Image (cartoon, rainbow, N blue to C red; front, side, top):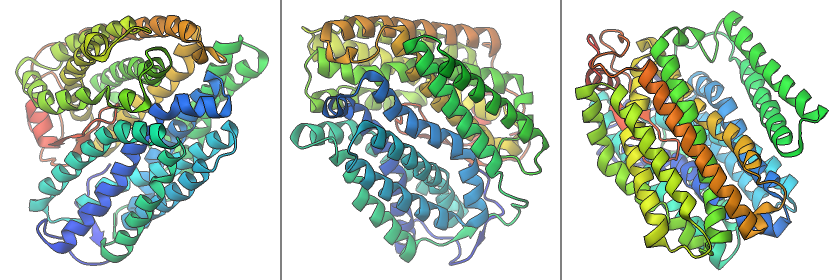
Length: 513
């Protein structure tokens, strides 16, 4: 995400929020980003049904998750540059079209390998949609109406994310997991039609030089090698193919860093990491979201295969997380403004750890109110205390000119952490092969996994205590006069928390913002 003060319009000028044209633009943006958010949450609910249908082991289910995450995380930065260069409407519509075609292919997948391949293709479409969705709003609406537009976008996006598990569970229960992919096709077509008729085109006139496609390819292939090596090594012993894949992935990621140092227009300006606090906050993000990602991958399987919840019941089990985060996240921002980010970033992950540990109580006799809901509530309270201060600190710790990059980096760190955790934690916990088909075996492995995840959360809190500190006003100084709007995203695809950079900085006690 970038600052759009220098945006040029190829079509109509800035729009009013109350105008018919403005409402069409908002609808296109909400449908596009909401489609991706809903899709992410629906897939997790469908994993047990996919595994049974294809006779796939847990390794196959890991790749169903990982293929989408790899291409989304790897191409997110370069996709933002593409939309600035070639037009946000054009890239947004292209992403929606790509997403629809891949969704149709996913619904027709004859085996687990084909599904994994098209999931990777869908990640490319999602990467094109994600940055362009917000960029269209920034570029299309007049300054005084951008806050309303982005607030509506955030609110409806949260509704879409919350609907995903419910809708996904219902579709799997009454029909087939294939419908969770097929339902995206008409939604994407509607987005494309609205774009063609109602969304003005816009570009960034100062974007110069070649798009850093090489950087995007290097980081994406590096993540592929890393994920493959970790999954193979953790599950089947460190055979030569696993070691070679891991070394190749690491080598490509190192090559990406060297490439970004020498290319004229990098997708990742490495200068953003000169801020010690920015680097430390992203370290906290990585460890915390690794814990969350591993648990959220395994929890729907535990609920359905062990506790015998229906897909619909497991889909709505986590809805209190959305409600609690919407209600309490603003309060955690206020607390962080008063006492500094260190306290909530130290205590919040420990509360999350408590919630994750409580999930270990789930077994074949568990009921929702007595066993699942208490864990969900504690987990949600910890997230509400942590997510807003965590991403806020990352944002205001970066130089103002890199606000968009800082947002994208923090988002990518969270998704990469999810990827690594899903690759490593299940096999370390003994969940390999067809273990998820044996309720007793899976439940034992799930307990081990959530305790590992809880430990990671405690470690993330310790990192925050040692590096972020508890003094108010300790964030790095932002550049004066910056008002770049950014969106804070939860790694669980909960509702984004809207803020402007000067509000973020002032809430953290940063002068001159």
